[in-house]
Image 1: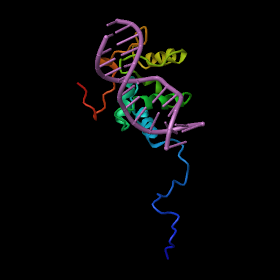
Image 2: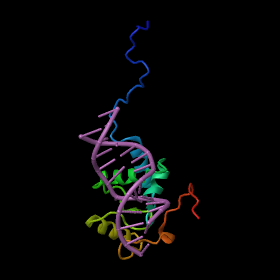
Image 3: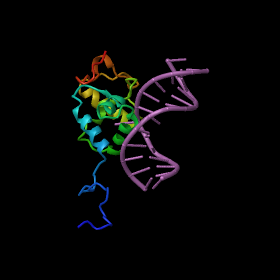
Image 4: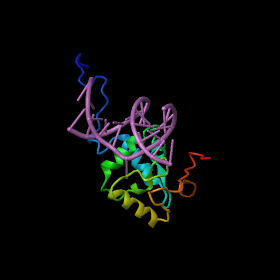
Amino acid sequence: MNSRANPNRGRRPAPAEKSPRAPATERILAVLKSIPKGKVAAYGQVAALAGLPNGARQVARVLHSLSGGEKLPWHRVIGASGRISLPGADGAEQARRLAREGVKVDTGGRVDWDRFRWRPHSISAA
DNA sequence: ACTGTGACTTTCA
DNA sequence: ATGAAAGCCACAG
């Protein structure tokens, strides 16, 4: 019963619904939500936990796209240098939110990793 | 399919 | 310390 021209040849059954977000993006968001309050994580760290060992930029891009979804603790993500990477007024707001959670942000947006770095069990940090 | 984007990260000077 | 350049990867148009 198989006709010679099989339309579904090799093609995976496309998802019934269009993806609201790409899979990698979903993982990034999942990790983002997993960041405990009062802690901060680097883009590269979040990316690594999301399955993208070098996807720091993807995290940044996703976050930028989400800009407005205040449901997510986007303000808990900072640069690897322990510095807030978000320029402009949004960066000031990020520092404000962190301070409200107990994270001391130095003038210029520096954060003490040793005190506020998020350490998930999956990654034994030094 | 190709190109551009991006709140990064690391390294070299 | 400061700055520039390259490397990086996934998504959107």
